[in-house]
Structure formats: structure tokens, C-alpha cells
Amino acid sequence: MVISLKNALSSIWYFKKLTFILKKTANSYYFISVSFTKVLEFYLKNYYINNINTF
Image (cartoon, rainbow, N blue to C red; front, side, top):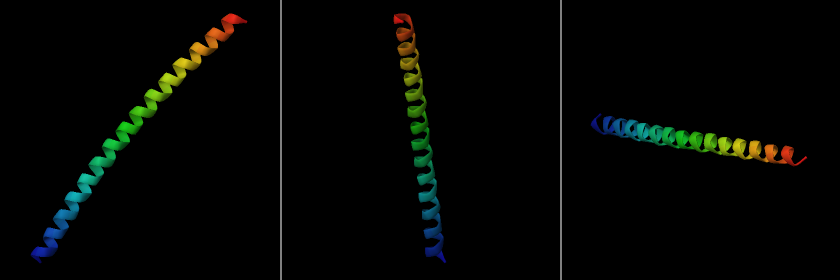
């Protein structure tokens, strides 16, 4: 009984740790993708503005 309880508690702790790590990773990936799209949008806008001005 005690051993199974310890196993259950440790598995719950590992699960919480894993979900925390996954959430942090997901947040960082989301931040990276958002900043990447913002930079891409900025470059594309500047590119189009520069090309339209040359025509």
C-alpha cells in the first residue's frame, strides 16, 4: 500500500513537472513564432514599399 502510494505521488509529481515543461516550451515556441511573423511582416512591408517606389 505504501509503495503504491509513493509510486502514485512520484508519478503525479513527474506528470506535473512534465506539463510545466511542456507549457513553458509551448509558450516559448509561440513567442518565437509570433516574433518571427512580426519580423517577416516588417521586412515584406519594407520590401514592397521600396519596390513600389522604384517603379
